[in-house]
Length: 192
Image (cartoon, rainbow, N blue to C red):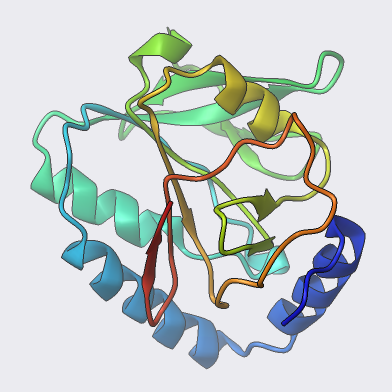
């Protein structure tokens, strides 16, 4: 598929996701987990994940979190809290008893967690709608994750999961876009 701009890709992949049935997403989530289990785990002690939104047909990242929690005893899990006034993202540690609230963007954010310094994050599950063969992604268009990833350590793992394969290129990449480390699809692991 030739290159497209972010706006076109957002529209296209929102529409493609909307066509997936619950059975489709359950099957695709299982395939994503199998692919993820094939990837060699690095030195990950603190993971920033996100709460998937079923109404946006997002990948069930809880499966991958559960797998990592099993494989890495003592893994510190964190979820983002977004400040809409500054367009910044902060990481908060979560545990089994953590309470959540719906945010401005309808995502579940921890209420009673302890903030984790960005330099303590080893890996980030980054949401996306589409990605290209160079490792750039199309998110939801607010820039929270790109701003956050620019503040992370250079060696932080930036991991995405996608129901769909890579597009050839995203035409309107700019200096604020941060490339991924890898993107896992039901059929393949793309490493960048």
